[in-house]
Length: 169
Image 1 (cartoon, one colour):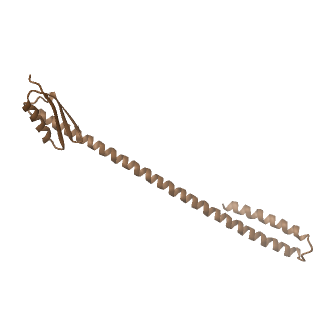
Image 2 (cartoon, helix red, strand yellow):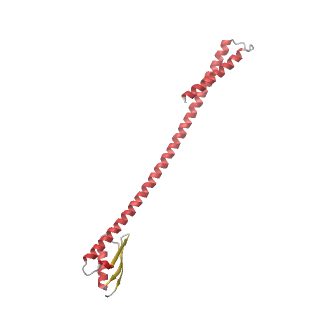
Image 3 (cartoon, helix red, strand yellow):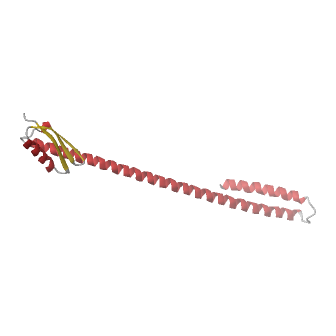
């Protein structure tokens, strides 16, 4: 901006001097050539000051506009980061719930395997949100009840849907 200001001031000075010299040819204002030149220089200085003020004002406005743009960009970036953080938290919560459900399923299946009267291979265990669903076949109503009780006793189980079918065999 400084180079632009210097060039503008030079152009204004040359223009003012040209007007001053042109005015020197007039004899009706009773000024000497030196007085006319001094007047032209004074006008040039005023014009240069005005141009400098306008350049400063323009620079200040441009700076304000840049600051506003940066502030808006910062706000948008912050909002995007917050949104991404929320999505990550949601994903982590879902992953945690899935891991909890998988852990519950594994614990129930392990406990069913430990029970000698239950054929755990015949029982399917599904868990969603802590709710365990048992499906498959068992040889008696007593084994069906025992399997349901084992599922209810597992840590993290909120409910049990005992859909086991009794098939004597």
